[in-house]
Image (cartoon, rainbow, N blue to C red):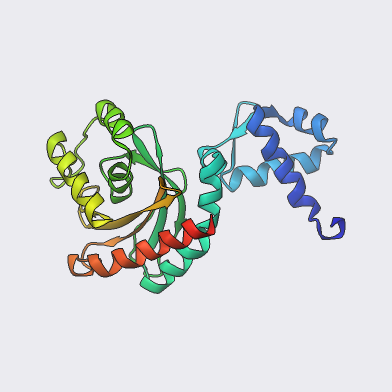
Length: 243
């Protein structure tokens, strides 16, 4: 109902909706919404410092942070994932993520920071080749064969560490193991000293995203893989049910 609307928030969201259609100048925002110059400037400045829009010359456009959050179906999945992700992060003390597939890369769509001072760090919109991380590998493992083959044909197997998979045959065999066990592990493949465990989010039989826990290898050691994978699978199941 009208009395519950937050006027300033509504104005900011109207601007974000408009920027999904086209880039706009300050003057165009003022003319489109009949805002005064001061209001339009303050709204755009706030959206800019929050990382949702960027200014190039005199034109404002959406950043990757906003574009990935606004991806049709995945947007719903990502926002619904926040409560389960937050609860999992607080339970295990580590950083938790949601990742989605974007071409041959995995993109971070949600992040909940861990509670330790030394923890894994990432931001919404971060991207990396899909074979490097647990998020990416579990997504690949649960794709149908046609999509998987198409991606692997385009994928360049860059090597970040000595543990990174750079042999395509070994990667394919590794993906079979991941699919069978239901989760993936990044065993210092992206960065030495960092480990990550991930599980797929399945909705109506289709893999739509993945959830992960990441942290220092000394703390997130191999002995914890099975226990943490169970928690991740429970988290992904909760997200699927919420959908």
